[in-house]
Length: 333
Image 1: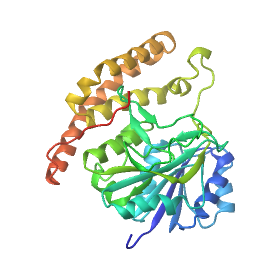
Image 2 (image 1 turned 45 degrees about the vertical axis):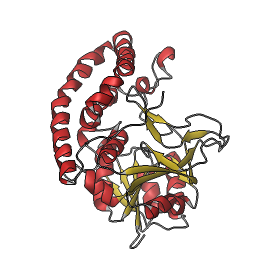
Image 3 (image 1 turned 90 degrees about the vertical axis):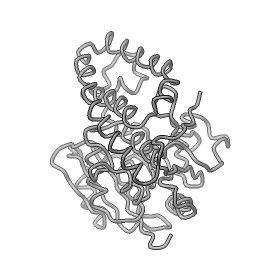
Image 4 (image 1 turned 45 degrees about the horizontal axis):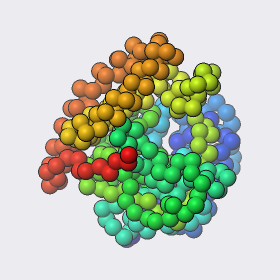
């Protein structure tokens, strides 16, 4: 790509256990990034002194408090200038040729806006994610999640989204689909922001691509903001392991993402699966988190804003010659 430059953005919160490996892998790429920026969300562990002492070439933005992922990532995007941006989880470790391999689809097709590689678990034998798909219930699904690596995900190609672990993003795509100059909606705070971004990009005609030769390891949940004291029978559900405030944001963001990006006809076809998921959520709230019900209901107040944003996005798409906002979605069964 003419004028290729790659920025790396890492949003960190109490990631001392992983941040050294993460940054070493980013700085040790065969296709070297032009800059690496860490936005630290008010960590209370040893992350900040570790980065300052061990990585003098990394730009550190140390915030006084936790501003959560969306605002932290937006700060990183605004600080960097690369034509490509790698948004890297602090508990992920890249293989040395990750950037070299992930940049190839972006160089080959100007409509590819994002690329993900094959993300593996730390054992190197289990797939963590091979791109992101959209389920009928409108939950984001990581392809291959938890499956043994038996050669099923060796073919590159288009996916619904590049996921949130190590997506390589084209700056022109980010600029094209931003709202009020922001890549992520800071009203989301955290969760569903990656699905919202890639759905928006898809509606604007951008492709997300899976490049299996770009590989990384991911300690999934290694530095998640979890709440371990939940009942055993719900512990396996990701929602149940979050603090109540973040649970409320996750549910709100799910509805806002659908309102902003889905097509009515497609949404109606998926309604049985959507309602089935909502019944599970409501049962969980009623039986386990009844105090969260008022926050859950309050979250629906975000929908008018989401629909106003949808109208703005549709108008922006129309000005770019896109008559139909939202194309067909490949939904797994």
